[in-house]
Length: 447
Image (cartoon, rainbow, N blue to C red; front, top):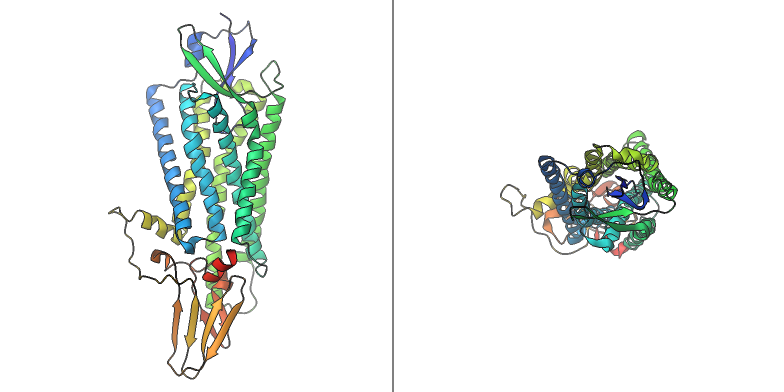
């Protein structure tokens, strides 16, 4: 029987661990039997059960959590902000990787057998790389949008159409970077002496030397890490550092009004949440990228008997990033927290605060009237401009605001992240409007 060189595939696919079997390269000095080949990366049943439980919990939380996030944003008009649209894009990528990739790759990693065919071998790895690109580029887009909104508050903000175009562009770039998965991934069928057949899904990159090292594969790994980790993390570190200095380190001239202070606090909450998302992303994906760079250059490392569980741990950590984001949103954002509570309102353990019903009017109007002073009606637009009209009034001082939403559960919430949409100093008194999401002026501007 001729012996085959066997080693764990160190392809750039970040979501796959395979046994690459070089069907044209034979070595006389190897001593690998059929039994060793079949069982080299098969774990004991009890360890398989532990890993299965960990991956099952991660898949359920990631898929369910991200689908709920998508529902919260798209089903409630107050949640349709630019940042939240990007979070929907991020949730789509996370839900795709947990449903279309993680489940299949985990079965493969556990059994060292790919039963899903050559076509899905290509598609599965293509989806894996595509969703990684979509996730990290979306995080970059959010950081740039927050940077422009806070550092250049007088410039027009990004609208719905621009957000959609950027999201489409992100997926196109991700698809281009994922093309090698479609081109080079294939399957190899190995027949064993006892009649067993095992199918291997692996990346057959060109220009492999006698040691199994492909220069093209190594170069792709390096480029992939630079484009999807080093540059994005560097860019987001810079933007959020500048934002932090602006929000926490700068001193305003004069005394801030209560409205301005609340606007600053609202911006800080959003920035804190996104910084946590980025930090967790960096921590989860760093071991993964390092692993594939090392194994691309030193493929012999993947012959070690412990490598399967090492990679399972690295792989689980990277994939678990997709389940952390919904948890972060629920923990750090009261609107998402209320949305999750609304979704699980059928559960007896979830308490949903009763809120007054609202009209379906989309306008946001603030009125302030005092005896002997005019009544002022103010309509606030997203770009900071407002139109007001004054009428005589002899009524006592009253403050009222009329807001609307398609869902009343989102009525009481944090102020809008843009203070200009929340607070207007008019004449000698302050007109205060608490905005929970996109106001009617926001929606009109974005549509």
